[in-house]
Length: 169
Image (cartoon, rainbow, N blue to C red):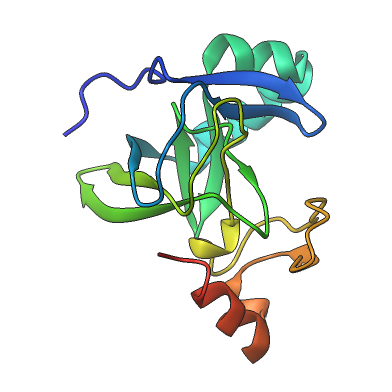
């Protein structure tokens, strides 16, 4: 189990064209463990309170100070901590595996899908773990294999599902 949920010293959160992102401060080899992490399930009322609070203050300042964000995955609201700023890309360089649950925590590990260079942003494909999303967004990854509108794996066609399955190790 993870007791200390601070960002590992070989990763850093920086501003980028999406807002904030997580960047490597060292090289990783394909298949290498990048971090162990967790997210806590929270109530809908806590989620709504956070959304209200976040909307009233400066977005970047709030997240840089708290290093936490919320999202809803498959109907459950989670509060992410150290990996809260891993952005989406249809051409990811990391993935999540070894998922397990204890009480109201979801534990998981992040691994390198390919070699990652020092200074490179860590990105994952949100479609790996979202069947149905509460929100949709137009992907801005500008990759040749872009899925377009991201709103959950349930909205992909057969070709897209096949492509997604090939993105894991």
